[in-house]
Length: 282
Image (tube, rainbow, N blue to C red; front, side, top):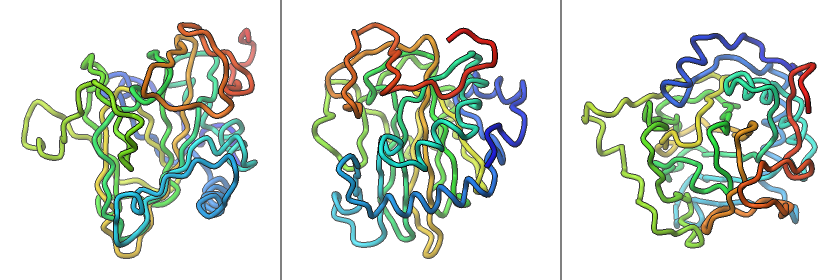
């Protein structure tokens, strides 16, 4: 299994990420990683581990077909997910796009939409959900299956990370604990003909990844394919400018780290160093 990206991250990739708040990187993970993590996802989906944090969206919303499954902080209790977080190319990809010498692991999420899953992922951006702030935070969403418009490809609004907006957290299963007075994110699916918005989406092969800024607005439709699954893992990493900001209506971090608000979260158990440039100071 490769520890470094299979393909170089170019100056154009960095420019696209800076301009759009998202970039698609092709074939960064080898087949061994894809097979290992697909098997790990299948195992995790049906494991009643005491530290698991599953969200069964289809069940919660009363759906009648398919399955939309989410699980978070899996790397804390599963060895394959820990290796994926700390030994795969993820950390180097994050550091390269943020232009930093060191990144720490924040958390991971599993996203599975089985065939005939109608539940969409509402338009949202990530940062309002997190007890953290900063510009050097990102998500790496790795496709473990081929992904296209029929089986719930992600869509982004290019440049939305620069809007200076902070929308209310959007929770797929409508968990009321995350309600707040923030402005609700518009349903951009109804605004496709508005020329002020640039919709970005990619057809992906297993091993491709999307990397996005935590304020880039995105969402996805249901998996309308009768036969194709959509499986992805999203790992989130942060660099030196991140600060701890445990606001109301944000998620609980596994391990309940005690960190002073406004400080860099250098907590080695909750947020270990995932990648560091050789020779860089710790």
